[in-house]
Image 1 (cartoon, rainbow, N blue to C red):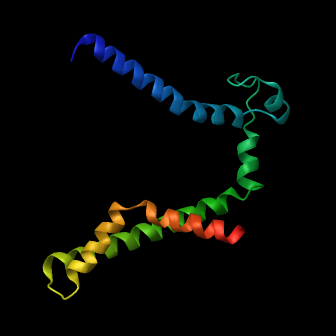
Image 2 (image 1 turned 135 degrees about the vertical axis):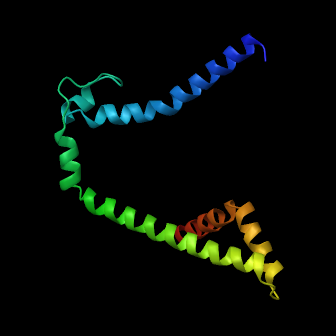
Amino acid sequence: MKKNTKIMLWLFFLIIAAVQLFPFIWLVNFSFTSSSEFYSSSILKWPDVPQWQNYVNAWVDGKFARYFFNSFFVTAVTIVLTVVLSLTLGYAFTRMQWKLRSLFFTVILLGIMIRFMPRCCLTLLFLNRWA
């Protein structure tokens, strides 16, 4: 690859990285501001006095600890069930011969390949609910 092309590629990647990181930097920046500074400051101005109390308020008043535990619990249960079911199903597909094996395998492959189908169905259900 030519040096000029390599430089342009790296420049493109850096621009994409900056665009992707800007919302995160903005979020962290404004998490330390007070309410009055939030509405009066510019986008990237770091607050004069960082408000660490905002995190304490979010943890205690916003019941963030409970939400964090709920997310952790759902994630742990999902991981354990996925691993157990994948192991048993993988063993059944590779080592056992049964009648509807190819049908189930095809259905699982279609479910993996066509990921947008449940979202489309849920969107239609949501739209029908509010129509």
